[in-house]
Image (cartoon, rainbow, N blue to C red):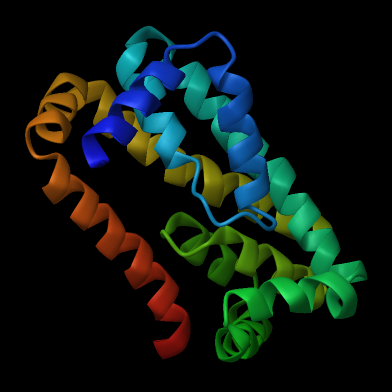
Length: 192
C-alpha cells in the first residue's frame, strides 16, 4: 500500500498541474486542512530538481496566504469557525497555552513554532484570536514559512538523489519517521 501511494505521488508530482495541487494543499494546511504540503513538495522537487526553488517559493507563498485566512478565522470568526477547527484537533489546552505564549513572547513564538512540524493552522488561528498585529504576523509568517520550506529545499538540493534512494529503499522506515514527526508535533500541543 505504501509503495503504491509513493508511486502515485511520484506520478502526480511530475504532472503539469502538480504545482496547483501543492499550492492548494499548502494554502489549506495553514488555515484548516490536516495534510502538510511536504507530501507534494518533496516528490515534486525530486522529480524535477531544476524547479526545486520555484516549487519551494510557491509552497511557502501559498502557506503564507493560507495563514492569512487562518488569522482571519481567529480574528473575525473564532466563535463560529475557529473554535470548530481547534476542537477538531482536540487542541483546546494548547490553544490556551499558545494564547499565553503570544502574550508573553509575541512574534518570537510565532517564528519558532512556525518552523516546526506543528500544524501551522493552530498558530495562525491563535495569532488572529490574540489580535497579534497583522503586519507583525505577516513578517513573522514570512520568516517562519520560508525558513521551514527552505530547510527542506536545501536538504533536497544537496542530497536529493540520496534522499530519493533512501526513500525508495527504506520506504517503511521513512514513512514511520514522518509519522512520528507529525504525531510528535500534534502531541506537543498536549505537553507544551
